[in-house]
Amino acid sequence: MSVSAAQPGVLTPPVRPMTRDEKKIILASSLGTVFEWYDFYLYGSLAVIIGAKFFGQFDVTTRNIFALLAFAAGFLVRPFGALVFGRLGDLVGRKYTFLITILIMGSSTFIVGILPTSDSIGITAAIILISLRILQGLALGGEYGGAATYVAEHAPQGRRGFYTSWIQTTATLGLFMSLLVILFTRSALGEADFNAYGWRIPFLVSVLLLAVSVWIRLQLSESPAFLRMKAEGTHSKAPLSEAFGQWKNAKWAILALLGLVAGQAVVWYSGQFYALFFLTSVLKVDGFTGNLLIAWSLALGTGGFVLFGWLSDKIGRKPIILGGCLIAALTYFPVFKYMAEIANPALSKANETVQVVVVADPADCSFQFNPTGLSKFTNSCDVAKAALAGASVVYSQEDAAPGTVASIKIGDQTVAPKSPTFAKDLGAALTAVGYPSASNPSVVKMAHAWDIFRPQPFILVLILAFLVVLVTMVYGPIAAALVELFPTRIRYTSMSLPYHIGNGWFGGLLPATMFAMNAQSGSIYFGLWYPVVIAGATVVIGLLFVPETKDRDIFAGDLSVHPGDTVVEFDPNAADY
Image (tube, rainbow, N blue to C red):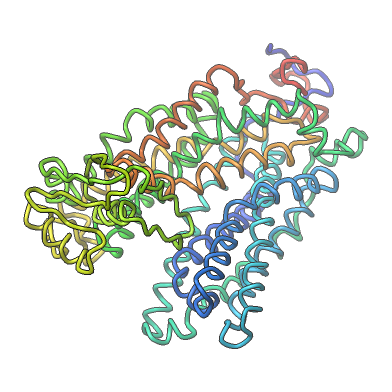
């Protein structure tokens, strides 16, 4: 790479303020990812109501199948959408493809709001709902890649990290929008009416966001990089086979997944989604307080997306993304332990001082991976471990003879999981040795947003804000890094697949995997090894094999450069273009 005076036909756009058209491009592109997260939080927050309305009337087996399909649509089918719409985007253009994806996505969200329940049309309601979720999952697979590619190809050289970082902020906006709409609707209608029909309103109002998004996107022009490529006749006629059937291109998709996205995904899901789960489900913080703490931390840390996107234009994508992964790998264990000590001191102390032992036949114990939340583990060992994990109790396991029914030793007491009074006996035994009761006065509790200024919640918000800052480090520059890693002719296809495998599979399965690891090990912290190991592996692979891309010229062939401008010239072979 070398720096020289500009020659005709070589691009070096000067650094300048963002134009009005560029702001419109970023807004239009970001609204799609707002939709993604708005629906994600809606479906997650209202899953119990939706399950009762569409699946609750069926037998357990049928209900489990539908729940699994709904889960799959949310996470597992996204990479397939990346293949379908990524190919389309590289063939016909970025603008029209992500116009299609937002229409599919937004229409699916709206239709959920008007869909009759299974009380009215039976199993057809569940089938339609699952079909909508699958369509939505496929569209989401194409939405992010299209938005990131479109914005990056409009951004001037040297500002791609800053421009694309605005897309990354939309997860927070989608969260806030969904929470506000749900809270306002619940308050206005009351709990009974909300459960009866009011749950539909958050889905119905999404049509307003859809209308604005489509209106703005219809006014946009095609990406200049794509238009130039089409005019020169250098576009790919078979993006899928070129991107993944040729090793020189496929290797970059694999390295992007393992050396960038996998670590980014686990740090992101740990810092936002698992942090809330840890607070409410493990540390027994009430849901209102947990959401307030997360909301405050997001408010404090969200600016980091743009900050680190901008900084990546100055010092590079790799130092920031891999730095975030490394800090996460080194700090997660002490940070989550400190969070436990502050949020629920009595529970934290009991876990350090009280010995609890599960005595069981190892063959009677399962790995309780349960992503849909509907699987049943009925062996005595599984019942014992699930109960202790649900109570956030640290325990060890003692192997017993084959066929032995499991039991739990708590101090000088023994509790039998198969006893009809098991739950009551377990609670009494744990309280007797020092575990806090349900009315534990030491657990953090907030009644109002301004309770943040009390010492206990204030410290927790600082802890959570630290986790959010790590999220912004790994996520802020990721779009620019992925766009720059692939040539224009297969960019949409190539970047979408590793992104959605990383975030849909590595990230989407994280909460269920971590809970299963905790239940298996008897520790409320053991599951942290999942993000720590993956983030650490990403640091090593990224350092060794992923190139720095911030100075890559993705606008080769642009003629809008004037003599005397500074130019960065590249070796095409080194960039694998």
